[in-house]
Amino acid sequence: MSDLPNVEIVLKASALCKNFGGIKATQNVSLALPRGARHALIGPNGAGKTTLINLLTGVLPLSSGRIELLGQDITHLSSSQRVKRGLVRTFQINQLFGSMTPVSTLAWVVSQHWGLGSRWWNPLGHKPVVLTRVDELLVQFHLTDVALERVSTLSYGKQRLLEIAIALACEPKVLLLDEPVAGVPAGEREEILITLGQLPMDVCILLIEHDMDLVFSFANRMTVLVNGTLLCEASNEEIANDPRVKEVYLGAEAIEGVTHG
Image (cartoon, rainbow, N blue to C red; front, side):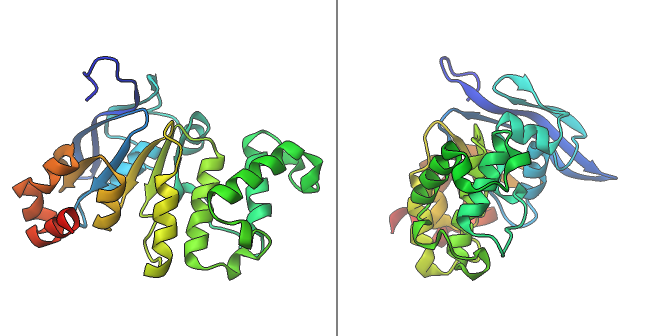
């Protein structure tokens, strides 16, 4: 994909390797995500998805390889430095403070991101621009009706929406969504799916997910990992019809169900 003309590659990973002693957890994995990408990273348990995401976000150091964000080498930057450059992961966001509200949580994050962190405790109206941005996020993530409730009292679906809102408040160029519907009751998933579908197209999104309905409805291209190696990367249709993918991960019935149902 990186060789296509006139395609701006936002995130590029080249020949990433991670060794834990004699164990090769990630072996020469490459990935190139263009602007506006809706890309899914899938694979069976133990395939190396978490390790790869930890390498991309700087949680783990590479054994070898290179990572670029908008053409700039970020291979040796810390996780926090990568967030400042625009590489944000939902998993990286600190655990939600149960005693805070969505309004106060988002106001704190926006203030921190805009360099107003030392004055975040001031009344929200002290910086109208912060409150305006918070209002936008509350509407976008369907949180207006619970904006003043304690986070600890919110449903799990609303908490997941708040986590994604926090990530978007950091103005990412690349957003890594780590299983956004994991643990969310079926009745609350639809709201999350709709919200994900409405995320801005200028944000490049890499989705890590086991829910195949979400994967096939959200992503337009997928990477399949098996045993720390790249099995294939292709469009949804190609993945759905690849016998190797059916064999090692999805199973013929599972993949046919989401593509034909």
